[in-house]
Image (cartoon, rainbow, N blue to C red; front, top):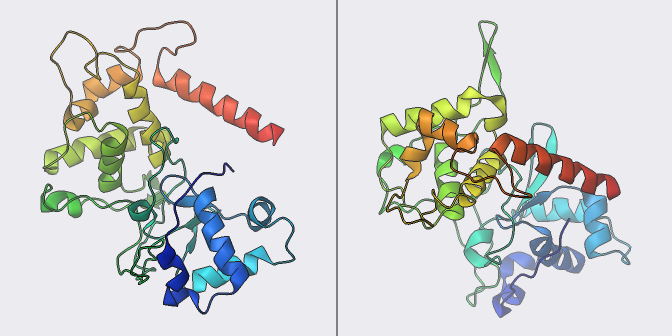
Length: 285
């Protein structure tokens, strides 16, 4: 787990929600901000967390994490049998470095378990009430269609013996598009046709039924001079253009990417090499 620089303000020390938290729990809470990725997510691995944050203290990290969870300062959750931690309202109070890598961890599936989010040191020192999750789309710039879009369900289920893919998390994919490709046209209206195209791309292959894959797909687009408008052409694609079947296939196959030394011919090759590097790094750890 990488450690990152985060912000803390005076209001943290006056927050009434922290009065009932043990001193070690408060210190651990701050440390979790430094371990969390740019979306406020991290793996729920108490032994590893203790080693990183409080290696010389005689504490039970799992107990402290549960204390924070019970007071709704963090959310401990499971996705496909893996354990994670989410820090509420993280993206509103922290400013990750622009070069910090994208989050590769799945967000909480349901957000109604956490009705209170902690502000990371706002001068008022008061907690704020809001649902937990990734940054919400601005209601002033989007129609109701996207707010009623498919909800993420990580479990592929069966119907009549046939496997049904998990529902497409339309809103979260649009948020990823805005985050990774801010130079491209923003999504303001997301209608039934656009939702159906995105859902089709999501369901075509199992590997695409993962938000981390879509983050890498949008990062792959950034490597194309043509798609990013770094050529003499006035062409500028938007999300609708990117997810149309023919265009999507060309992008995935590297048709808009020039093959150079140490570059990749397509997203499949690129993802395969990244996976091998990640496994190699984990093996060293």
